Length: 439
Image (cartoon, rainbow, N blue to C red):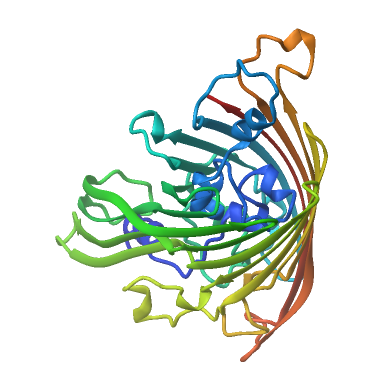
């Protein structure tokens, strides 16, 4: 077989792959990660598009600080724009008895987040808050997107490493329907899809590397899938509901034609790619604020992994991977120690989307126990006399997250020397730092 054509096929063939999300596993921003993500009922900052987009319409930290200020000369505005950045260092450690596991030792999940909210009341004045927000979670490993086309029997985690290496882009609008009580948001979860064609001429039949006469057309456009959110506040209670639709990378069709120099053999290949799938997520949450100092939060997420898709061409040879829906439980506690300082604790349980039996695939997913601790410190013009000219607050957030990934035994239906039963486990350390300011 012609080596250039083989390389082309190996590079473009679709694969059975599932992708995770930095935000779902490690949190969308250090402040919210400190409560293990149990924040959908009361989140109010630029990470709201990820957790619950309705939170964009709530009072943000600058507005709350202004309300508590005794200075009557403070700027009178209904709301403020917000800008946030964070860096998250994540060091996963995975152990397995599978062969060909060298790449697992290099797994990294470092990532960045960027958030921006715009107060649209600055453009059109209404009695209730109206905001637009965008939230970006991006790899910080040196790769923007990784499409992993290894054979499914190569061991790889489905929610760590390359499976997470893709940007998550969410945004939308939120409106305060009932003053200080009811908030609704609608937005988008965006990624890419498209199609293309490849033509290779003058492909020599040779063991040596060659450069064929190539022509490539690739058209990609955004997939815009909806997200919805609702929050309700009553006295010391907050309630939240949110929905985030699935996203994936799809290139279909990717028609390929190769023509050899010898005998003029023409090969027509029907290829397609579907990768980096993230499932639908339904979230419900409740929180209670006691004496304006102690907040208790609880969230439950339903992730619809059972709706995972494979590419059209892959379905010709392979069945859908054996994955199942998961229900994640999250608990969080926040202690408002001082007006400028708060501490947080959290615990979350994320069960594996992989069952205890398998065909030939050697996918790895873990029952995750997530323990978090975090703190926030708000710098204002009242913090120090040296900061008297500081016009807007600066909020610093820190989180320390330790995850234990329960050891698992996977039994093959037809075990063999090339397809043995296997076991795996792991752990991860996550340190995140975020900064937020207002405009």
